[in-house]
Length: 307
Length: 110
Ligand code: FES
Image (cartoon, rainbow over all chains, first blue to last red; front, side, top):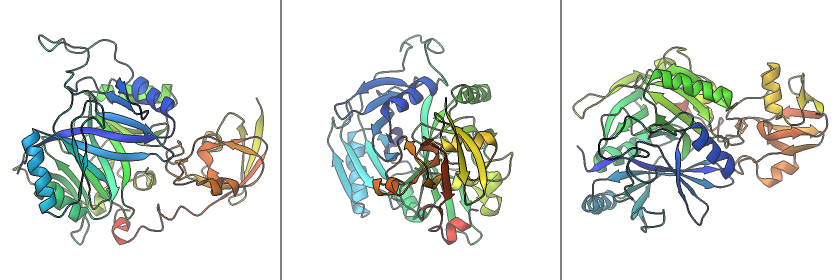
C-alpha cells in the first residue's frame, strides 16, 4: 500500500576527480549543472525534472554512492514516515534543511543492506529545463550528449535483502515488481517501486554491504540508446555491456562507467506495474537471461565490479 | 612518445604500452586478457596487480582498494598505471571483499 513516497529524489555519488566527473555527467550524459556548494559538491539535473537537482557529485578518495533519497508528498507524510521508521526499530538521522542547497530537511536511515537512504518533502521547484510551463515545446534545444531524460533508479548490492524488503515494503509502501528467486526460495534480487516503473530502487544480494552497482538514467527510444553507444565510443568512455535488452523489466539498455569507475546505465522502455500486479519472477538458474536477454549469459563484471 | 614493454610474470604475457596509456588499456588493445578488466576508472579494484620491477606513475585510485602502503609495495590498479620504464607485473589474488567473501547465496547467482 502506498504511504506517500512519490519517487526517487536524488543520489549523491562520490567521484575521484570532480572536473572529469562533471565533464562525464554533463557533456556525455547531458545533465545540466544547476549549482555548486561550499563543500565543493556539484548539483545536476536532467531536463524533464522539475526540482533543482537529482544528482549530487562529491569528490572523495573512494568512489561509490553516499545515499539515495526519495521525495514524499508533503511534510505531514514525512513526519508520519519518520515515526513509522522509528516504531519499526530503524535508527534515523536528521539532516537539517539547507545541508543540500535548496533542499528541505532530510530523514536519513541505513538499510540492512548497508546503504543510506533519505526521505524529504521539499526541494526548490525550478520546473523543466529549457521549456516553458505553459504551452511547452516538445524538448529544449541546447542539450548535450545523451540528453538524459531523468534520473530513474539505482541498483545496489548488499546483504539482508529480506530485512531491507520489510522496511521498503511494510514501512515505506513500496511494492515488489520483479524478483529473482534461488532454488530454495531465497530472494536474491528485488526490484521495488512506488510508481508504475518496474523499479525505483533495486537490490541484488551480495555479501559485502553498501555497494553501488549503478545509477540509471531514462532515455526515450532504442535509437537514443544506440546513439548513447555511439557517444560512448566517440568519447572513448569505459563500456561495460550493451546495447542489449534485460529479461528483468525487459528494458533496453547500455552500461558504462564514469571516470571514477562508478557504473551508469541509460535505458529505454521496460514493463509497467500496478500494485495489484503479482511480482514478475525469474529463477536464479535463468539469471543470465534475466540480466542479459540476448546473450543469455552474465558477464563476470556484472556481479563483481562495484564501487 | 615512448613505448615500454610490460611483462606479466604470472601468465608469461608480454605487450607494449605507450607512456600516456594505462597498462590495462595497452593490454586490452593487444587483445590479451591477463589482467581482469572492470571499470577502467580506478574505482572497483578488479584490475589490481603488483609491479615487481620498473618505474611507474599512477592516476587517482580508490583508497578502498589502494591504501598508500599498497602503492609503496607496487600493488596498484592496472587501469591507473602508467609506465616510466619497462615493467614486470604479477597478478594478485582477487580482493577479499569482491570474491572470497562470496558465499552460498551469491554463488547461486553465478
Ligand atoms: S578496472 Fe576497476 S579499478 Fe581498474
